[in-house]
Amino acid sequence: MKASLILALLIATPAIAQDDGDVFADAANNAKVHAASGFVCPAKIGLFVRDAVGERDPKAATDFCAYSALDGVYGTIEIAPLNGPYDPKTALVPEFQEQEATGGKVVGEKTGKFGGATVYSRSYGTSNLGDVHYRVQFAASAVGQWAVQVTMEYASPRDDALKQDFLNAVYDEALHRLGGAK
View 1: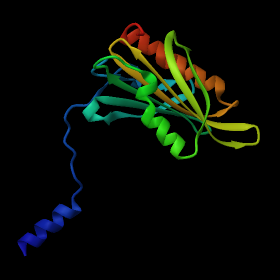
View 2: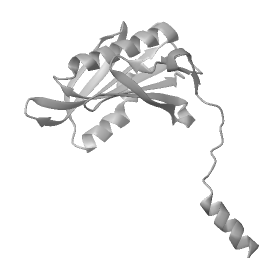
View 3: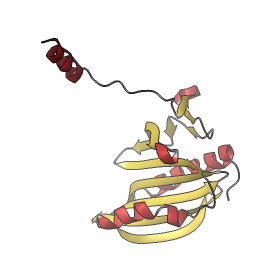
View 4: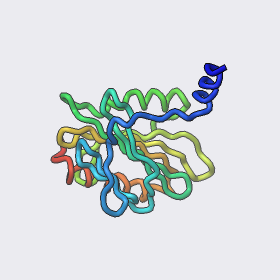
């Protein structure tokens, strides 16, 4: 009887996650600071509001900050330490494969400047509704000893300026906090 009561309590009690140390620390104005790099994820970037921060892939020490804006515009920043040479196009292959497997079509690919950093990016078209084209853009750059990758989901042309502002703000912060672009 006692064993069944203990088992019932264990099943009914929510699991308590062990805290191995938060990868982000609280900062002024509700910002979050990435503990390992010093990269700051503010509460807001333009019209984007931060939704979450945390570990994306603990084994690879990859962490993230997720943001959203009105009308279904999303931006996710991933930060990972570099352990050698970094090729953004190669690093993004798993994301490209996933996008292509779900029907995404490449609509653009370039290397350009965002916030002063040289950034590789590739955009996929996912669907169209009249003159609105839904897109997913992947961007990546090595900044100092860190890989900074951004995924944007937006509608073009409606959100093009908003997307550009977000990317500029992210890579400006990366250059400021993480060092010169490689």
